[in-house]
Image (cartoon, rainbow, N blue to C red; front, side, top):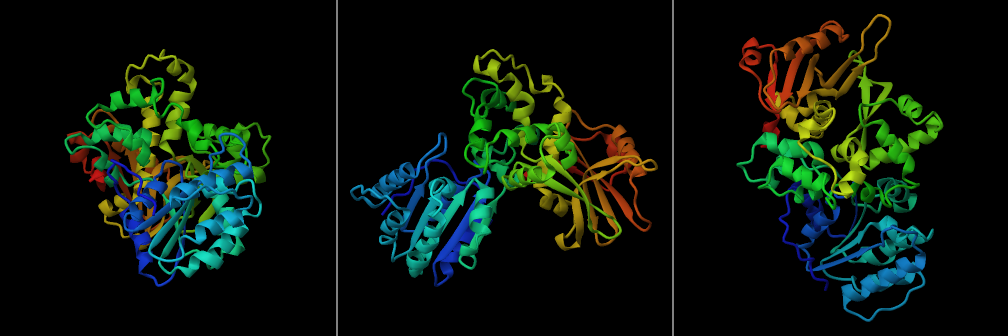
Length: 482
């Protein structure tokens, strides 16, 4: 029996995902589970946590594609892992069918969790690998009614195309988990309660809800100290992370993916605008595939525009860089990386970084959009009452000015909640009402609709803003941490 990996890290969050996995043990048949999500999102840690409920836990992983690997190298590594996991002499396998059988014969009975981590690496050089995984499940694994077989990977597009959309696996998969960023209420648990919401949100604006990044924080240190150490010091965890998270997760070379991300670092764009930024050399059909893969990887989001009257999506789409770390890297680390690696970058303060307030606004928008369920709760909006919700962009015409809304919620009662998101070191002043009124004035809304302006802020509002009673709701983002 394999021993559980030793870890001193306290496992935070993922109650829903853990319960979904443990519920499968109530079945009287084996379960095949697929877990996907961005690298560092905590897929392996989740499985390790669930494995504490299993007397037998065996974990295998492919070799990372830091350099081109061969089928033989992957099989040799798998053979070494078999020997370690089952405490047996190492054998040599020339075929995945034989190697998988060596695992199967040892998991035929008993409550067992079998985990294949980064499965896309494992069989990357063998076109017959997936067929043999199917046979592995059909012939051997499903005969053990107490077995939970979990495969996971960061290469979400590979998993989508080769497993989830593969007819060979139809009807065999019991559960698909796509892991997202931790909600802010779980992120909050990485700090002691005495740390201010403003201090936490400064860091979260850079890390997002990525568990591994939050584990690298020194909670007793200031946000400035943590960010300087992680982002602007030679050897800092987030200095080289951009290169690491791209290794082996896409179906093609990563250079064009990185160019697409760079085109989105300052603002959301349509597919046509992205193509123009790339020089128009990439055909829109091919570009669509790259955007789809980036979306599956969790790095970008596709925001749909919609018609207020019908509630139906329009053809207009805008792509948004939804990963806070990636935007921060592209804006501030990448261009200073050579200085950082020489310890020659003069980091004074976050606010001294160029375009800091504008970028923090975008980062804060992402935090809100990743936690929109909690925002709706604070506004008293039931999920079933929402027709559409997203950042909203009104395209300018000869008659209608353009308008951009940070977050817009349309309910079935004909109400539009128009949300403005502000990140500021000082309390928001009375001019915010004028800014919002200007947006509402140009927003084209059908008759019979009600507009409810909402302000979400980080560091307070002045008494004038409260006394004006202009906003239907004023939400301190610190409330999302609770």
